Length: 363
Image 1 (cartoon, rainbow, N blue to C red):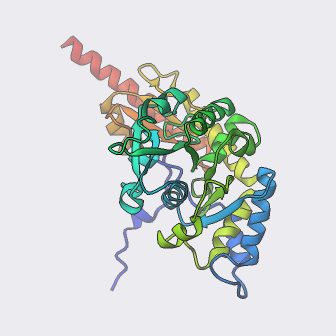
Image 2 (image 1 turned 90 degrees about the horizontal axis):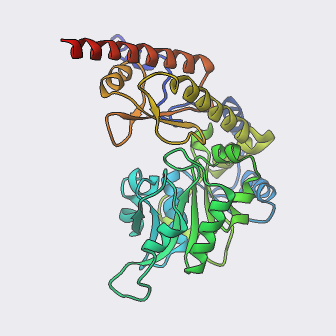
Image 3 (image 1 turned 60 degrees about the vertical axis):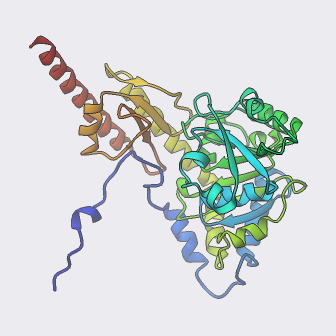
């Protein structure tokens, strides 16, 4: 019997839908092969995870607690569960990944109430935190217990060191703990051009979800505990929420490879650079507007829905809350030729649409 696999779907292709669409960095694959020999103790008591502990301590300039997990949703749910009491809630933006894109996992898995507030280009502010963190001691109100910010945000923007510090100071003043969703933390670090400690632990963050999957890893993130005084039972939540990897050395080896020789920053620098190149190319095209600052590796643009639909027949990317608002995401493996070809197609489709609009208006 002949092979009936879909040969078209198996052909390599490029798109701008998500940095999750990109493959695994070759250096990461090599690291997996290197640790795939002999035996190691399971569940994180291996020498590779011990080395990762040392690497993370060096990265942040102090001892930290590390807990590798399978994915970003798991990292966020486990991290938040470990800093909340059962009756407490989390303040986050209404566009956050935590609220919009984790399938209700915080609520369904951990029973965490999310207090969502409007963000400014995806960002929380001290004022927006105070607008929701109130009625402490009122039994009918889910008690605010933590703040969660994403770095970079779901809108592709980046919190400055001063913004993170102000949020942390406000949260701690109110008795709240601070969680950072760092699924794209490397892109934020590159955009800011400062050591990662400056906008995390030194800025008052209590616990971090350190992302790797979107930056070239096969899978995996690491929960990083900065303030053990407010974190309880993270190791138990990791197990009971099905995020404890028995063969943890493979997750740890990937993160070590990512951190080695600053591969995490090099890959993010490339992705951010490709986003800037794409933004520069399309913002000159009449009829297209850039809707959100391109701080990291995402470009948000507005264009006619008809053009969006035609472009999506050839290129893969997401619309965002509207048929006319699109998100184009660049990854560690996005090539200049990808950007050039995509921008050329956008320009051609926009020109064709303008001609069609002119013809319709004249008739």
